[in-house]
Length: 391
Image (cartoon, rainbow, N blue to C red; front, side):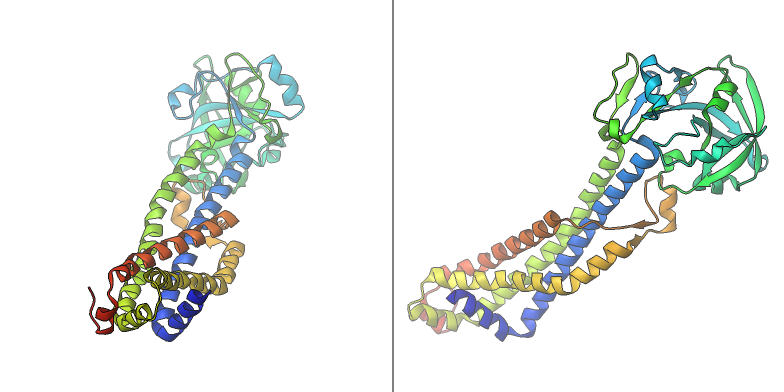
């Protein structure tokens, strides 16, 4: 208790130097927590959007389907297994048929993927209800990115050409009946969504699918079917997980830099304090204070810099970070074309583990850095210290 009182008086007597160190440390607290919270918020948002818009509770893949190999699309569809049909009727599964096609927007040629989906499905957030319309043309829903690249608007007509399972080319007119705004580019870029029965008719197939999407509530009880492989959420979200991990590693450089600057400020302060107060230290030792207690006094002084900084960071950091969590962080428009699941605004997520972990880490680092220069006192002779000498 005496060490804390003396340390507080010494810090109070240092005046501006103490406040400068406290402000620098508090800035490190706030920036580190904000940066890590922003990455965690992005991670949660990206995973949630991928689940809601694309993967649901997991996907069953046709044995030849490989989303990273476009050459597998033509052969990667087959009859829906009997085990799946009851689940489809219960809307626990929704089949998707994928086919390659070519469209001609404004006289240009563009390769696309036609994706047939049941207009009555409720598993994914894709607005498939707009595909229920009956018309001679093929009703189509596209994403906002696709609309920008093709300059399509709702009500526009375009020509689409495809090849059926017999190798015969055919073409028809399609009409844009809906444009969806989604943060998931993998269901948007170069893709056109049309009714499942219409695509089956165009491809000359019956009740076939490439992928079946499971409802989120059925993700823990996958159906075992020969040939069809079930890909769970962890597998389908692996790209996002790896991307966030890489971003976290690069963000750690800023984390380390801020922590290093804070430790350097405390270290320099402690060295200067010991040098300027060498007569005081010698007097204290001569009056009976043990070297260990003197070392403890300077270590406590350094640790109290961290405690005061944490308190100051809470004063202005809590309102600032709360406002950021509510209002979000606006992402630049260029991020929309990066092929990543990034929303227009990212809302940081601050967990108790993040806040407490960062606080304890900074406090521990400051305490250790304060102890290093204080060790020199153990070698100090009281007579030399009173004379103003340092051994």
